[in-house]
Image 1: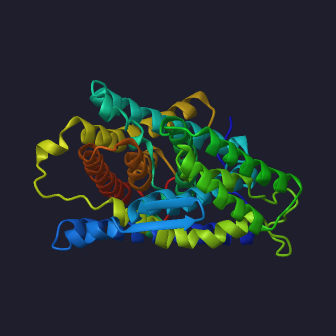
Image 2 (image 1 turned 180 degrees about the vertical axis):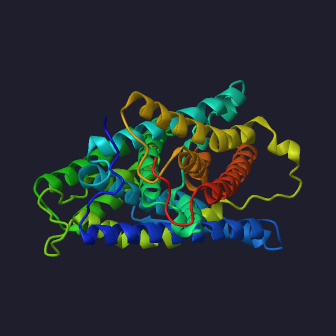
Image 3 (image 1 turned 45 degrees about the vertical axis):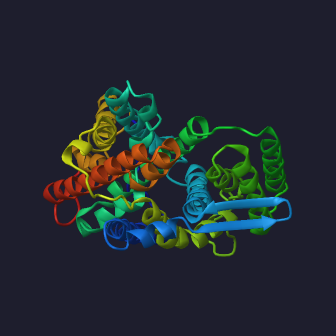
Length: 410
């Protein structure tokens, strides 16, 4: 019987890094929540006009024949979020080469849970919106998990939360992000430009060559990453995918790098550690601020009960935990994996509820799926409602079922 290793014997430096990661994510989640609340206050107060004007500030960059002009909202969604996806890709590559995704025994449970946690919400959304082609463009909106927001809520529970739960949640979220990246690449690209794609391929090939030749300096990769971002922006493929591609081509010293040896460092880890605070405390809160400002004036209960927002709510609040917990129970019944140490079925249900906090990635997918402002606002209404419900229900549930210090063995 394969088993998830939930209390691995890691070197002290690795344990410190892991602890710092959880603290950073939890604190970043709290800042993220504050930014969303601030956006709602601004959009529903006398500050609404100033808030809208801020989002629409024109920003233009012109270098010779290259001319990129967008409102601030799109510079954040297309530009700064590319840095977020760069960090996501760095995290995925590190986990795959030397982390939680490197061993099959540690990958099986989160992989299957993450897939089920995408399929179940999508099916629920489809069931409610299958007759509306425009609404169905957002079928992927309720499939995402916001790790920062979720860890921010878990931080409120203090020592009740076993480390194994944070590890499993983080690993599921990493796989979830990878699935979201694939969804964006295959379903939310349009109007492709062959010329721009060719130049993007040239930039990728040059990064791959640098990697193959063992170049570890970050400068050339980042310079080519900027070129790649411009090419992808002009190609019709969403520009954030340039961040993903760049992150996956940053070299990572895994086999030769002793984690307890300070003399040799991975370029990937260096860049990830440098960017992570900026993403957690600046980019994601700014993204939340400019995207979560939904005007609630005139919204009635019937609006929340419409098929689109209800599909998002049911997908996140019901579909996520049903898919994740159902997959975990199936894996345990088949003898392919066990619940992590310190987690029983009740704790697994709480984890599933926390994964229903979609927020950042759900808002991002909604911005790609819906050009119609009415449909986008309905999606945002569902995302905010579902994330709040999942956070509150998950918090109350876990506070009730987890002992004050640690958890029962599962």
